[in-house]
Image 1: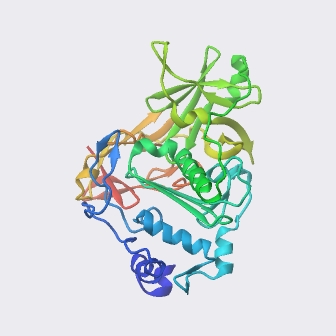
Image 2: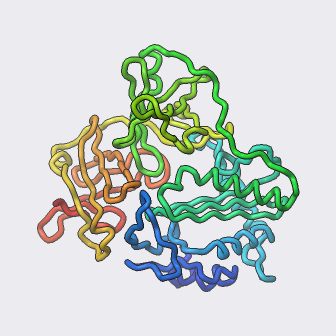
Image 3: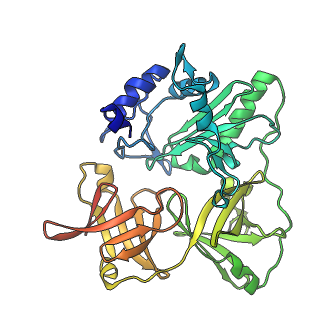
Length: 399
């Protein structure tokens, strides 16, 4: 829409009319190729430096910026849309962006404005009674970002991370930063994070445990399968399996794994979370809870018929239309698992991407689930006499 109205490319318009006006001197939406500029942070996966995945110039997930740049953005929000004496956003426009846009059971306790969280676990700070505005983002390159704005105290917190290991602990880092900032400004001591106190565990029959079982398409991509065996529940995510404990309130918590049955292994942020399976508008949803706030984690999906044409496409694929060495190393495997047509991406230790596909025809499949990336298409084309799979600008050729 911006390109159509302004006559400029989206990235050019944003640079000239928005980012520079805000004083975000190094921020840009412009495409980055196979090599990041020297000023960019390196990215890490499982402790090792990674090749750069080229980022596009789409509006979502393509802004590159520094902590100082993002601080300028939050200053504009705290100044009711003004920056350096210039009105960037009209006050009523900014207010509309921050206003929760809709209320639906599919969102659990999350209430979102236009690009901002207003209610839910993303903007929860125990003991704080003021308004909070939050925003978070991530790319497929192990970069994670979070903003938290506290208008009453005129505080803004920005956290930028460049490692895959940080993903599950980002909310904790943001909360600790907020507590430290509040204490520095108000002089009030804020409690530190502690593990949640959960209701008592309860033993349930195998029949009763079936209410939790199923395959769930979760954010961002991965499938989670909850199954019961011998009166015990297990959640499987690729090669990772975690035991689950039912609680008296109907929730589930993740068990602490033990090496040789003796030595506990850290489960990181999972120690703060509980999960419920609820039904909303006829859909079974997996909801995660933190600090009493529920966030949609996934929706149950069921197997559909798979045609002979799609079964014949099972195998390993590589990207055929890239010059990026990093993308060339990545592969996609198309398999049939537990009755689902599943696409799995590999090439990075922390990227166990797995998506369930609904083949709506012999040449088109739709990503199953609700939410980000869900409902997008993978289509089959014939190029130079060979069949290929096309998704989001990438062409996958069978090896």
